[in-house]
Image 1 (cartoon, rainbow, N blue to C red):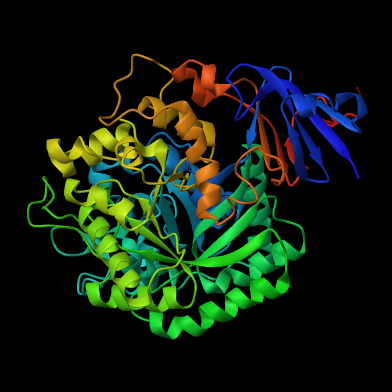
Image 2 (tube, rainbow, N blue to C red; image 1 turned 120 degrees about the vertical axis):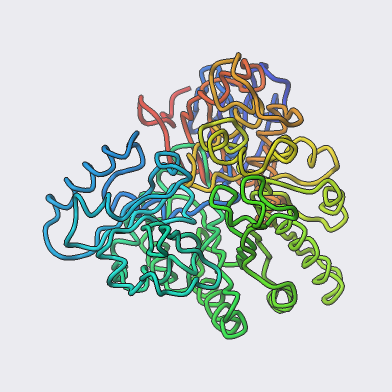
Length: 544
């Protein structure tokens, strides 16, 4: 039995700025406050917090670790600041990796071309003879060269795919930008699958990055069943540095055929018995994104009055699928960005409750960029968890150049209503959607509080109700634990709880609001095991 006492720092659940302690025995919290302080003299190990903050570890309620890890497998275009830099990076990568195979990279900034539309000819100028596919930062859009279009057989005569959009030139020929899976899959069907070894390495890389920012649990919100072998291998090899819960994607056209496989795959994960891997959730993409006019809107887009977006499911198919999935005991996790998609999701959950009766199901609706005022009270009525990606709630170039023109003035003022929905008594969990946006919780927390995403206190905030630091910390920890059905074992610092802990350099509750996003994570512990700590090492040094 090993007793470790964390001391000389601010502790979550105690007054801000007041130094006290937490005691951990064999991975479980055994004392907090003065009781823990009294154990300092008999502790096996001491961790001096040096005036920092110790809180429950963060969870990420919606992310894509496999996609994030795979970004390192191709040309590094995420930091490119203009079109020429992207092209030069792809050209150099092709030179460094000769052959005739596919070049796959992510994630480019969609604001670098007008309307987010990128031309195949631009890629042809640097790689004319090999197929190239680059994902946009939103992962709902790709940019391909002419060779990739030729391999996929996409021409001016190609019909518009269901659940997708081919951006075309005036003459009807494909430009090189494809939106949503219905169009993207026409090309990705020809890309060879990654080996299990590459996928395991990607998961190790991504979960290690999560651990370094204080995260111990991640909802992987988009898992194809073909990827399961990699997750099982990663768990068996000790390559997961956080817990990961898998959400298998339900296909609008073949969900009924998928059901037996969902159950079998869940059972395989359960049989494996690795504590860091679970598979309790099914993902439903209800729509796309506002920036490509594929989010499903009640009223037409302001800059495209003939379009209400692209719903992925018809109402009855979604209800039938959700009822079937819920009856099998899975948690529902719905991507909904447009206000029409949000309403469709709420209608579906209402139908599920009516069909299957009451139970502790904790349905999650993610993103919720636009919610019609009529639908706000329904989240509380239906016990829906509202999962936001708070880093999106700012006036960045994506917002000002692409989003505002599509929504118009009135809808632009009611985006990401985090404070409003929390004030109505709804549980709000936070996520990053990494690699869409950064995975660091402190950046999300800072943005939730300031609604600027900037360290400049004079920056113009995005319209919306305020959300304080304590609530934001709670949304990234306690409420994510509730989303994971783990509130009885982690998510707060209390005796009997698993010691999932995060150590910040200072107490965000007493920091200046515009400085919160910049606070560093100095240590992360998963069930008392350090998954990240900073120099000097070892963190648990055994001194008294």
